Image (tube, rainbow, N blue to C red; front, top):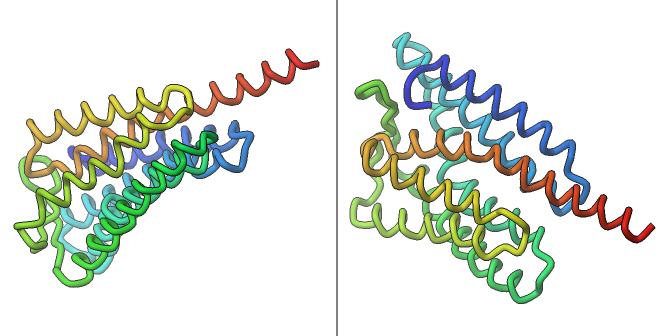
Length: 222
């Protein structure tokens, strides 16, 4: 998280607990991946907590870089694929599923680009104004286009999905992106990921609604 190691670990613990609860209430295999999103966000926050500790202590450089890369792999490589894919496999409408496949392909290409950048250019985490900045030498001319594609692959699927209330998660993530972009421009990746992690608690609500609908449908047909 963008303020301290304690906040990162506390956030990671709470979000992980929500993730465990969400996975437990998921009744369909197609919901499992989407339900596990908070768990992965929790892992991401734990990783950044380790980055905080190693930066503060000034030692354990290898552990610091391992944790930093876990955070960045989750943020830049995993999410552009996982989010559209998890929404796609829950989708029942064939037309919408085909559209979501397009977003998944775009996300996979973006993930491949970010993976290439992380393998080709060094990344160094730094503390700046009580936030963590992940300094990297990624091609500057592609930073903005890549971020736009990132938004395209992670936000529209939540609005396209026919699953109830996913659009609310999309609205909240979009707003958090706007706020972190305006007020935390240099540390946008860290701050936005924290906001998104908190918002992922909405997934519990989405899955619980689906579970209630299924239960009510069974009772009505009984």
